[in-house]
Amino acid sequence: MTLLAHGRAPAGALLLHGGRLDEARLLFPQAPEPWIDLSTGVNPHAYPLPHILQEAWTRLPDAGALAALEIAAARTYRAPAHVEIVAGAGTQAFIQALPQIVPARRVAVLGFTYAEHGESWRRAGARVDVVEAVEALAAADVAVVVNPNNPDGRIVAPQRLAEIAHGMAARGRLLIVDEAFMDFTPQHSLAPAMPEGALALRSFGKAYGLPGVRLGFALCAPALAASLRAALGPWNVSGPALVVGAAAFGDADWLQGVAATLAQESERLDALLQRAGFELVGGASLYRLAAHDDAATWFGRLGARGILTRRFPQRPRWLRFGLPATREAWARLAQALGVSDES
Image (cartoon, rainbow, N blue to C red; front, side, top):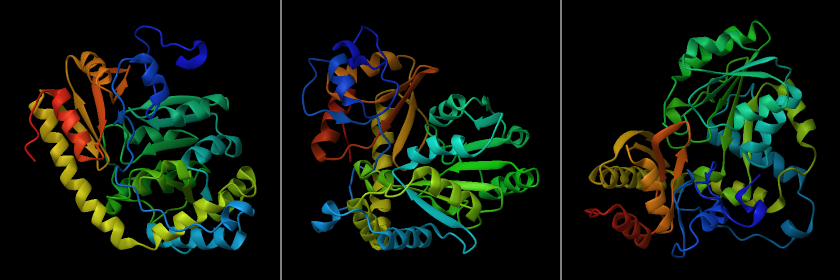
């Protein structure tokens, strides 16, 4: 049940997912507008939308355009020829579909990580174990690794993941690697190798700053790709999403340029957090994870100033910060933290 169920936010209520500004407004009703949402790991510099013809809205999505988008995605992700790529309405669509088509009694998730994978497999009746060692993954029917990890940015080398995938494939098992935040560290991606027994997920909306487009991809063996297509059904990617995705994948210069900007802004955010007394724990290009003994107080203090961060009940000292989008947002964050922004 969400905080909205009774039209108010109970005292001490937790925002358990990022991007819930409706619930944040109930939790902090006096906060100034506009809100600065730092609770999601989404690129604050959105890809400029291309012109979208009216027929993209008025006709069912074209199968040829879908095929062309998947080819462009395969090229961008450097997928080998033996791998198929399936487009879907965001990586969440695959997270929910996979437990319905892959039989698994025991699932191992490399933790600590975000909860969606584990919850989807539990709903399908699987036993889900959160493990701390990569070696513990191999005993499961399905293993899940978020790489880079959300929220701490941990990286497991693709060579190590390939070893695990080969071993699991020999026993008819599956390794799922969620690469939703991999676009700006492609050297760590499993996609160019894609060993047998592995499936990789990629998010379009996070890297290109367009989560509302609802577009994601699965890279896997042809048989599993066919099962995914059947589970997702026809027209699961909208016509406008096909247009936007094709334009973005054809603009490698934009991605390279924004990568440099994000690297600079990550350093800027690190400096702000350290000046405010936070300890840097980790992160990736689109978010930073910081620790503080008074993290709960900081969550409330920032929320009261219209700045939403991500907190974790299982790790009460942690707060995750996305990158501010504008000069004004940076200034408001520095003011709320009580430090100077010396950029």
